[in-house]
Image (cartoon, rainbow, N blue to C red; front, side):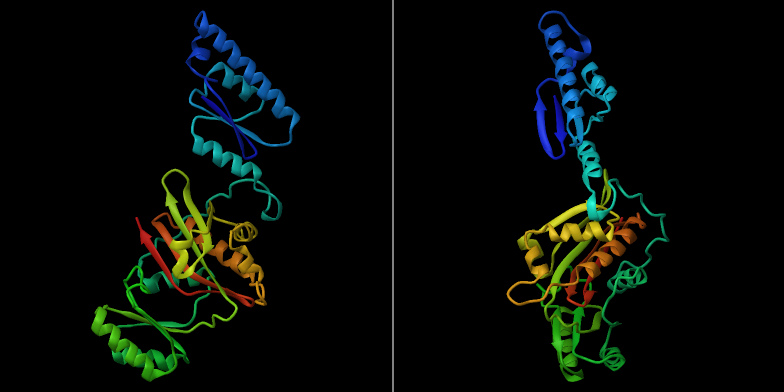
Length: 319
């Protein structure tokens, strides 16, 4: 079975490149082999007449029919995934830059602290902006953090995967008194070992995105971008690309989302800063590609406003 992908359109030809073409057996086998070779010639002629890229996948890439395609300059792959990756590399162009898969950056020193603040520090060093924050373990450290920057504050119980669902996040705490009350209530209920005190970001006219990278055993680091926040898993409005993702390509992914209208501005809301979002996506995906020990890293949400982007939460999983 051979499948040819013409710039995103798939056409399958049953049996092409199969055992009959390889063996050239008499009778029906010979007729089938001849038909396969004729089909391969027709595909080569068609490919020469169109500007659309063509890649082919076959379970028998060494068959005579497939060799005919290769001689005509048509790439043949045994793996569907490899064929799709080659087609993507041939067709991603325009504002995102020339077609091709970007090489992985040199490996950096492994991440030593996969905790929340360790991941924040790593991302901050790569140019991903975060609000001011302090990690605390008791009430004295909580008050010291409140003196380090002005409110309103955010309090997060750390080491919880879904902090909001567990009631581990308190937003918009206006002063030290409200911060202490929120800390005592959560500490009594959750008993978390540590917490994060953070400056509250202004969500006005902002859109929450999710940006993550997962290291796939076949493709390597694969980036995901999409609508973020607490509704990420419910809406499933995300797009994928191989990491690292250039900023221009990141903007293309965002504007291709079903909910892209939210980014452009709706019902009197201004458009958000897509260039800032693209820059953050490039920095995060480049960092993830340079850390093979990180199997998963995610910023959710990435708050994108008309005047910039700010990462509000982050996590990482090590191999």
